[in-house]
Structures are given as structure tokens and as C-alpha cells.
Amino acid sequence: MFGGFFNRMYYGNPNKPDLKYEDLKKRRFKLFFTVLQVRFWKLIQLNLLYSIFVLPTFLWIYIQTLVTAETGEPITLLFFLILLPCMLFAGPATAGVTYVIRNWARDEHAWVFSDFKDAIKMNWKESLLIMFINCVVLMFFYVAVTFYHAMAMTDLLYLFLYYFMLLIGLIYAMMQIYVFPLLVTYKLNVGQIFRNAFIFTLGRLPHTFGIFVLMVAVFIASAWYIFPMFLVGFTFPMLIGVSLANWVFDKYMNARLDEDEE
Image (cartoon, rainbow, N blue to C red; front, side, top):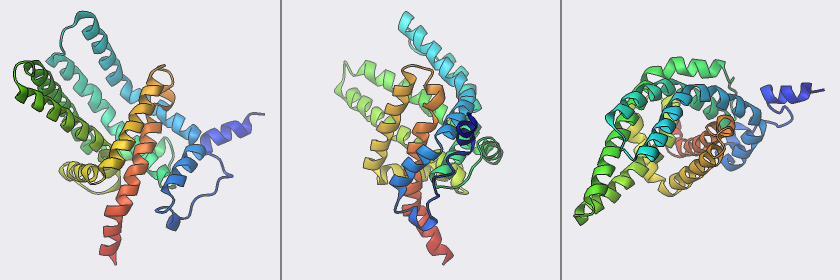
């Protein structure tokens, strides 16, 4: 009775034909909704799997938020010292889930568990370093924003620096749309990954900002009731971001690689 339901949940919808490779660059928008429909249950499976790895990070942030709201005390260095191993734990898993979604977003095959595991094995060192950098940047960003905000009451220069830091933080956050897709797609070192992510963010700023806002909105909407976050709150926004990254890669990097091969 339920055989068809569970088959679609595990394998996807066999009645939806794959798009031809030559049509991908022209039909990215349509491909996104095709992937969303065909891979719907797999995205939920992948989201549940990824939730295991990001749960410590979100639990620690949630606990700290409650403590800060109740006591009014600022975040201390201890928070970041505990946050660091939590983020490192999620790093390789982020590479794994990005690889699987990257393949689906390109209308390529990927198994939820085996390809997730293989991508972790191939990218664990770089993903750990990326998460370490992200945690350190987050710590310095918090310190700078807190300091400039406090000093802004006495000097307009600090007010300017405060808003400047917010802008830098926004740009860095938008760069994350490209960081892990670059990691799992090309043979680049971490410095090259961040450099290209920065270039793509500024080069496609309107697109990147719009997609970033949409991703945050989807995440907040799912996190509002907690449980949906562990079903759709991670992989669905990531599918949106990776779809943009694939389009940007096709437009700038893949076209150049094809010319070099010719």
C-alpha cells in the first residue's frame, strides 16, 4: 500500500526525466524546482543526517542566548572556546552535504549516505580549516561590533566604524554561499576558496544578496517552530544557495576551464 510512497522517498520520482546537460546553463531556474520536487524526500533525509552534526552548535548558541537574555551579561571568550569544537564537528559534514546537494542541483546522481561520507573523506582537512577561520572571524566580529557600538555614543567615527563592520560581516556571511561549493567542486586551497568567494560575492552582489536574504528567510521560518528546522531548515536553504553557486561557476569558472581545455 505504501510501497510507492517509500520508493519515492528513497529514490526520488522516476517519472520526472533528467534535463539534458546542454540545457542546464539555460534552465537553472526550472532545474531548481525540478530538483526540489524530485529530491524532496531525499532533502529531508539529508537534513536529518546533517542535523546530527550541527546540533551541538545550535544548542550551545541557544543556551548562550538564554543566559545573555536572562542575565544581560555579554558573551565571553568561553563561549567561543566551546563554540569552536562544535563548529569543527560540523565542518566536514557541511562539505559532505554540500557535495550531495551540488550534484542534485546539477541534475547529477548522488547517494545520501555514501556520497556524503565520501565527500567528508576528501575534504575534511580543508573544511576543518574553513570552520576554524569562520569561528575566529565571528569572534573578532563580535568584539569589534560590541566595542564600536559602545563607543559610538561618544564619537561619530566609531559609529561609522560600527556600520562599516556590519557591512563587512554581511559580505563575509554572503561569501559562505560560495565557500563550500568551491571546496567540493574545484581543487583549490583555502586561500583561493575565500578569494574566489569574495570576488563572486562582489561581482554578483545583487544576486548574492537576494539569495542570501531568501536563504535566511527560509531558515528563520523553519527555525520558528524548531522541529521543521531539522526537517527542512538546512538543506532547503542550501539548495537555494548552491543553485546560485552552480550558475555563477558556469558563467565564470567553467566557461574559462572549457576554453583552456580547447
